[in-house]
Image (cartoon, rainbow, N blue to C red):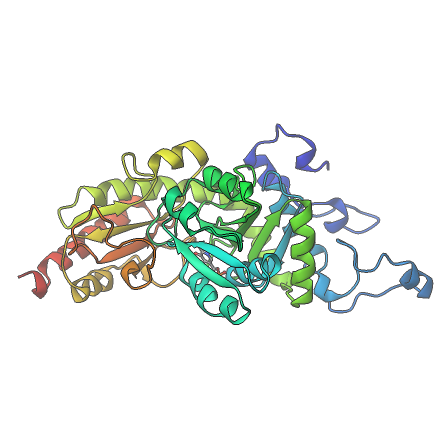
Length: 413
Ligand SMILES: *Cc1c(COP(=O)(O)O)cnc(C)c1O
């Protein structure tokens, strides 16, 4: 089987099916490619046939048997598949979680005395890393308004070494002008890192749009089944080498069982994303017209902030969006979420099952305002929905009865 990257005309769906399935990983020496998927190679110890082989071994080279911490065919197949799906990537490093990937990347790129710029809509554990881990290592983090180039420029200084982008932000869904920000960063010698979890490489070609390193929490769309955690960082040759060495030095390794689950999820990811995108868009359009709702936060919604950039740069969406209630109280919002039957209450997304969580950005923002400047100050209580694979009509009916519970809540009387 030739590798999909051998042919640039190969479409994303075909690529998703073929990627990483090297014949030597899916068979035996006598029967290469005999099965569809790589086996789960559980191994800490890798054996050499004799001392000559050990002595001749190109120690620790990529994709060679060496020792369990460097992975085996199951992990290599997943890493290669993710590389095949990220245009412009030379390699992918796997981490035990998305947070571990972000930490691993930042600890590769930054040194004591450096300044990191971080988008103000970043995933909260990324912000915590800036205030904690990085600070403890003598690295300063400064936040900038996600949608303002002027804020980015004003926050830059001569010690700025890297910028962490997240687009759309996974709570409030602002889309960043990644090509413009990455170009401005490059002109100043700043490394741009994108948390691309929302769109995945199927929906946004991060490196092609100028990012130096693309990070994903595979826990979300790639797993797709809420049963496994992992993260990845994909980059061109230079950063890939550095990321790999640092990950190795930090002892990062993922289990072959988990890599196998991720490969299984990956094969259907495109279909799941398309179904969830279509359902989320229909639900967002329904929610938008509800009298209880002040604002829907989704770049997929025509007319919404971020839609122009999303339509320009993205090839897909996903099931994640938020909305803000018209006034009300925290207790009323809790009653709404409790009234939902089909939405689980939980801090994740990207699974086959729908989820709802409260969104309260005000408490964590430092460089931009919440509610957004064009919103009523009393419209502060947000809800984030991760739309899964249930029937859209059932999800809408569930939301309708829960919004009625909200409207009837004592605080509105
Ligand atoms: C979930 C998430 C992460 C972290 O991933 P884990 O696998 O949970 O550690 C990072 N970024 C975004 C945008 C996320 O939603």
